[in-house]
Image (cartoon, rainbow, N blue to C red; front, side, top):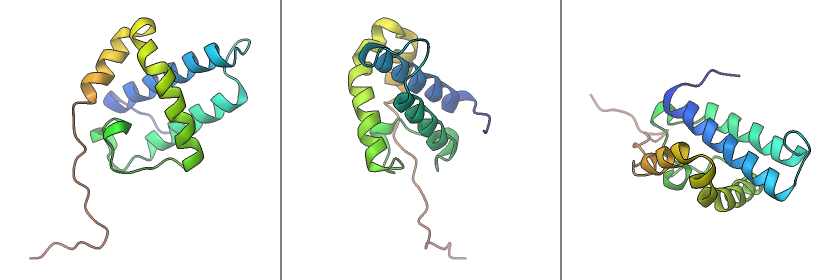
Length: 118
């Protein structure tokens, strides 16, 4: 697993807290995450590590690249829809930072076929 830092690390912590909040309040596992939420968390970590934007990654809501499989995207959207408003009570600093990060737009990506002219 790659080491994340800065913005990506904060994004990882935020998504972990959102998944934990969702799982504990909807699935009520004893000591940890249920198997489905643990799988979603691991998948989210993989997507963050492979993000084409790297440290310039926008929040998912502002991202033009849909890197999640449709099934996982539906799952993470349900988590975010449930946990997002509740994060202000449970993790206000993370929630505020996430809202501020959401004001940034995604950087331009070069197309694979584009070649610079000399």
